[in-house]
View 1 (cartoon, rainbow, N blue to C red):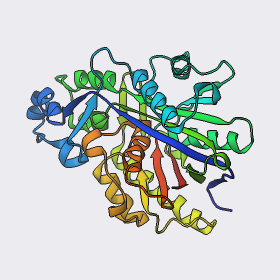
View 2 (spheres, rainbow, N blue to C red):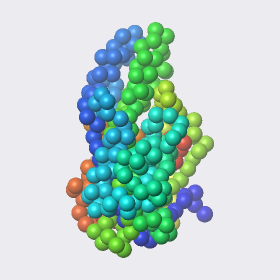
View 3 (cartoon, one colour):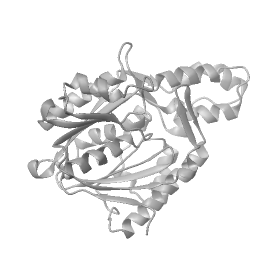
Length: 341
């Protein structure tokens, strides 16, 4: 018995995938300007975000824009592209990391603004940066079961409150190099939103079949990345080693279980940094030419990063190509999902 959970779908298809880029571009040099005194005191060089993470810029929402605005816009666009009416939707899942408070669920405001029927289930799925793919799995399983006809999965992200708190802390007179390293990943985060519509494949031959997914956990490493309302704290070395290691273990066991992903047409990964991506190429053996990168200009957009990248790449995908979604979420969990385009 392997350490993977393996789910195969019978009748689920991705009908639409859309993205909303946040409004304003923030170059990574902004961090150098804000933390100039701290970097000078600690004798740390400028340009760390570009050189260590490969993040050249990221985006933020314009003043007055809420992360749910992006989620609703993406959801409206996905429904229109799929040709699905709001009253046909039986399930809405919000998969964002971002939330304003502990309750109510973010999904309720999105459900209301999309004009979905009172009969449409709605709830949040939170699993760090894997929430969107988990949402696709839940939606596909419910469609397979005949419980619903159509589902919408959304994610809108806004880490700017974390940025403010982090900048304030890292400008303190007692901040050490270790403090900067521990909160460095927060500065790579960006804003954005994405949405997907999932429906029955037998009614939508134009759709992209969701073949299934494989997930593996290594929850003994749940303390490597902790995010709260005041910021995110990471063990970057531990995440790199154990996160990519978990992906590699899941990959090898999945192939033994009958999945064949060695020569996919495209690999759409959760976007973290250049170091994580390079280690993924090395340890798993993925062809870099088939792995589009978006973190250099969007940063890490949390749960929206992977679907935003898929939405961007979808413009270039052709019928009958095979696509593999993959990522690691804090905790740790790793997931692969195959979509037959």
